[in-house]
Length: 347
Ligand SMILES: [Cu+2]
Image (tube, rainbow, N blue to C red):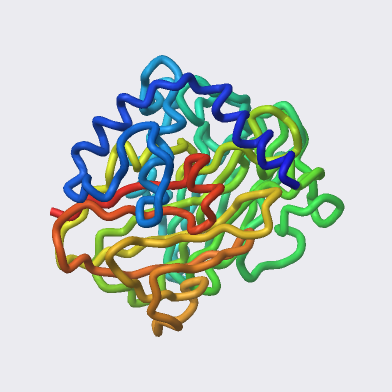
């Protein structure tokens, strides 16, 4: 096991040159900067997470990838909800429709590290599909990729639209299309992903997205944020070596998420990471209410750290009482070191 860990860590180090200056500049701007050690200093108690990006640094001195080259921006994905197109059926019920195209695309997941992803609509994660409980949903799926794929929804539906090989239409071949029809049930925070075999490969290459079913009467107004925890195996060793929220490692560390003091912030948090048994989320200087799977309007817990297995998801609600800069990251130190960390900037 120690050998594996060394391999994974040295993978990112090898992909990235030791620059660090960007990270140092970033950290210098942190109000609580005294909590962090000087570059190159050994970590000491109380500054565990802060020093790590300084040690890794990135290729070409860049601290982020070009969203135009990738075709998507982790920051925009945060607040990007795809409501599709609606029309009213003769019954009076709302029909909501989307078109989803699967295709291969090269993406950069950390500066200097590119890989060929399998995407829904050219982005990883795929679009955040959002609807209201009770609606009729129609997803027009086109496979323009290089392998047979499917769309498998976590929802209550008939087997023939389950998107699983051998049941109903099953695999959708390259160049083929299929229309998935399901009901928006139950309300909550769900997901969709490809269910072709080998499953781990189809998921880890990028075929997943969030699926939000709002309760009939909605939820309180809030600054809503989509966070899909994902990971990549960029050197094909059967193990992840890059971790992120919304695909680009360290993105929200270098580009803090700006939120307003005392305002309600609602985080839609999903863990889709393959190859690791668990993931976790921790926020600094605050606590949040946890709504597991978003299927109840009553929170189950008031905490600052949660654990999620794959496909587990939670709605988290919090307000920041103080302005300032607050980290959030996986409380799985290895993942945080390999990219899963970010900052809230409370104004
Ligand atoms: Cu697939």
